[in-house]
Image 1 (cartoon, one colour):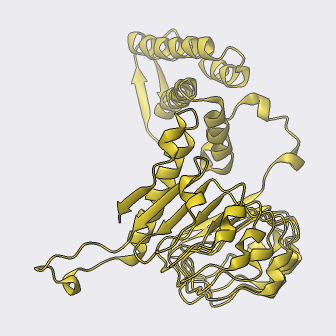
Image 2 (cartoon, rainbow, N blue to C red):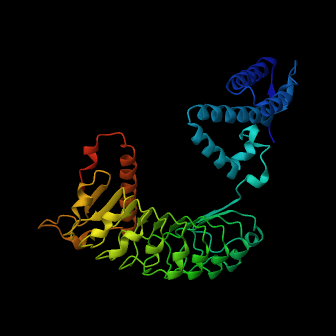
Image 3 (spheres, rainbow, N blue to C red):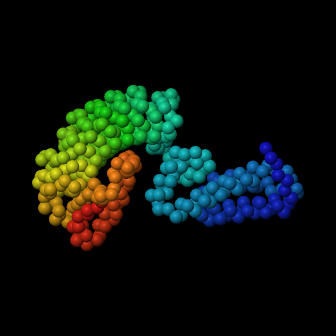
Length: 383
């Protein structure tokens, strides 16, 4: 470990820098005593004569002051919700070791904290063995690994609320998932699931279910009708030829995305989804929209492909409270264009389409105060 020889002038300069930054820090946050007291202890022994000191003694103090300084400046530019989100991130990251967390969070009851497991990267082919003993966890976030299946010991995680496992190449979900009665969110997007276990219907507190792009997924078990608290269901980019019967029994469903499947028509009893607010049907070959859809009094947005659509109730078109978006999915071909030579990354294109729709929806949600005539215009756009 290196040493640095400082004369009185150089030492005084270094100490002045530290003390000036501490005073500025006090102005930003005068209540942050713990950090300042620690710095004061480390700078209390200012030598008068030339001395040998460790280089890390100065650089470490300056580094910690700068970290706190930058953190506080950043927080002053954020909204309160953004600061809260940042603090939650710091609690889960190694940055918490730098003592950047607010002091008033230190007294929080441990029972109120979320316990989160995170795992990312192709290098992971199986879960850590110690995970099976961490049954107190409330969230699993496993992204982009090569783990082929979720272990059966997951049934012991009775407090689990979030199962977020996209892009892992999962081929099946364990039937033991039905034991997780506290589940609120399940995300199995971009895996290789061939089916969904009926036992998932026993997770009656589930509020959000996402199963986008699982390739050959074509049906759902009728037992999922028990998911009466489900408000968001994403079934996009699969092989569904019709809306499953169990979905039509989800009376509290507010958002249904069944885009990019094999739909050609819609069920006449679609008005069973009486709470539905947003329905995404684009990238299907739906030919007509049944009149019963006009009974969905809470419907605010309908997105549908117009390439083969020949019939849609005028009440939906003329209703100023419904944002009707008609998309033309098939690009215009020119005589000199050889479509076979175009190499399309399907997954990347689908993600871009979803990002476009998400952005567009967000802009529409910000237009609530605009004149009513702006909502009457149906949008036709080329993807």
